[in-house]
Length: 415
Image (cartoon, rainbow, N blue to C red; front, side):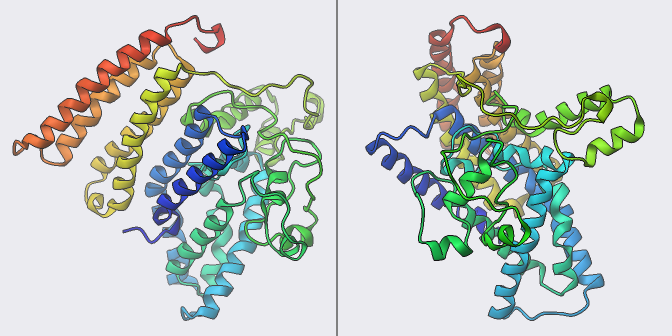
């Protein structure tokens, strides 16, 4: 069982998203789109799955520092837990702020800002690479003697706090609360791409860090959400690598090697003066419309069903990671199948030419993996084979039918 509170709280996340959906339906608030919400959660799925491998690097490094170089040992008392939570939030502020100030770091963090909506599903839109660039920010906590278990726990609780602030359903809160804590209003500013709001309100739990270090901005007019160069895709893998791809293109065009290196650590948008200099964020263009490449209703229902299956399988994988500790290859196969599933769902939403074939392959691989990992091949399990067969045949027929309905002209740029 994982000690990470963010994994344990997964059912609560979906319950609250469901409540927000119902509330928005009652009040006729249009802040959810199926393709966007599923992509948000898909990014969270890929983040959790890849995180299962990256924890060897992140938690392993912290544990190494703690066991080898700590100055003292702090007992796990309630006072130390409070101290650790505040300390983590302080270092989170700087890790988060630098994720907006350093081009390479932004490559990881930009994933969380890509949605053009703002609702609770956006909280789950997490990067698969950000932790690679930011885990070392918490090293002082190891040197101070804060137990790795405490670090994992307070980091999880910090992320849990940030879940509820990703909503437009809550307006302003009492002044005393907003003076100390991060709130939906404060965080809406952070997710905006309006130039006046960009790189503001980096706090996790305590907004006081932004006020102390000059990055606080109060919410004024309604924000426009997203990033300055919108992703325009429902593919979670592309969401994780798109900024790095842009960086490579820019670096190829920069002639001087020292400027290539400088580009990596400069602020996003930077170019050498002889290439035009810093590309500042622009105001929201007139007639701006959100990216909304849609699938048909029948395909949406198909994806919803398959998505429930995927989320169930992902939860089983995350809650039973210990079963794969001795078999890295099998762990990688399951992780790869989960991530591949999120990619095919995005392709179905975008009506890519290869989507139906890719999804057909996935529908075949899922029951095959189930039979392999649960012993259906070794000792004939009639129930397991029966359920797998029904899933395979039923899914293929449903996919063919839904795909026939969705075969309509596709814009050239989405071909």
